[in-house]
Amino acid sequence: MVFSGSEILENKSAQKIYLLMNKPAGYVCSAVSDSHKTVYQLLPPELQELQKSKRGEKLHTVGRLDCDTSGLLLFTTDGFFSDRLTRPENHIPKTYRAILETAVPVEQQHSIIEQFAEGVTLPAEKKAPEQFSGPAELSFISDTECEITVHQGKFHQVRRMFLAAGNKVQKLHRISEGEYLLPDNLQPGEYITLSPV
Image (tube, rainbow, N blue to C red):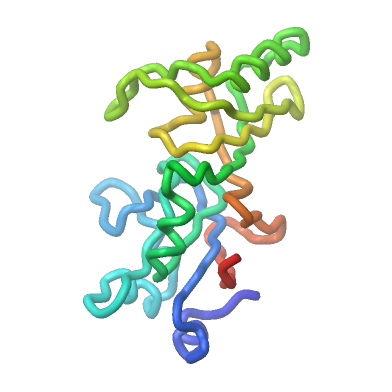
């Protein structure tokens, strides 16, 4: 159910806040940015203030999506909730839909699926050194569109996996994280309130 910021704050039974947003591309997950708009600017002022709160737990994103990635992004004031979903040892699955720059012929798709299932060496990029990714599940929708599920949160992991396979991701959209699915009818920039699973 969609609520306004004031309605969320007026709900006295809600000790913690849990939101699921359809993040648009072009927004960063930081609270402040000199070069891009931030995801907090998509929230009403009442909730933006909770991000700046000096009392209790702040409203924060559960992990991050990079600026060019869209899709499911969780917010909460519950540190235990975000810790459970982001701890590497919990191997929380995250599924993305990717649009690739170069078409992958059917005869090559099985090879890449097997390669990702075994894990690949991610090329070094910006802040991240060359490193090994764990196994990922890949399925092709077409020769340029696929879904991939990873169980880690390495820097630009999905993009770097496809680089290791000789391809580039043009668009990346997260459709699920753990038990949470992005509703089909949730428009970019919109959010809904959740109860923790």
